[in-house]
Length: 199
Image (tube, rainbow, N blue to C red; front, side):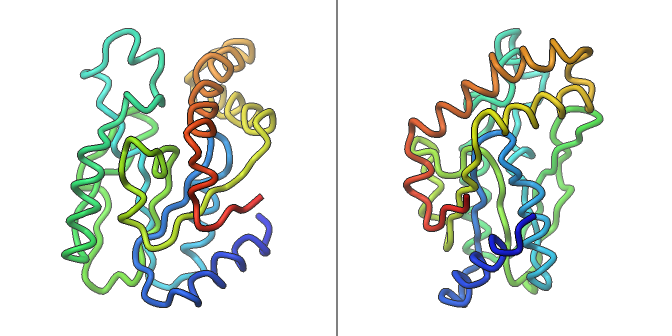
């Protein structure tokens, strides 16, 4: 992790000392989770809230939804928007995480209380125009990553976590699902709408 990228966000936050909700967006494999965790470690008391907690449970998805899981339509953006809107108002709440072993959301796993100074939300679609989340954030960051590099990371992750049984199957899933998601994010202009683009 480049310290320069953390420094860039820290500088942006110094310019916005009252910033409370921070979005970390980017294509699949861009390093959002790692970056958000590293950033939170530099911001005492900050809490990381992953968008993955708003995956629709597998039981709610049909065969195509399971095949395309991770696409925008396999999430609950209305639930996320309602929770973030409430969080902005109350400065507290209980939120879902994502259980990678169960491959489903885990309700009530993350708690934010009134003493939490900042909440870092990380996920693919936070700046997607249709989801209408961007106005809720005080600072929006897009991690810009070469698509081929990102897909290599994603394929390795699919293999490591058991989503694919072979390297070939992992690469196929990355190409037929994650590439489509990445291209949708870029075509929507998410990168251009961010306050800060980190390459």
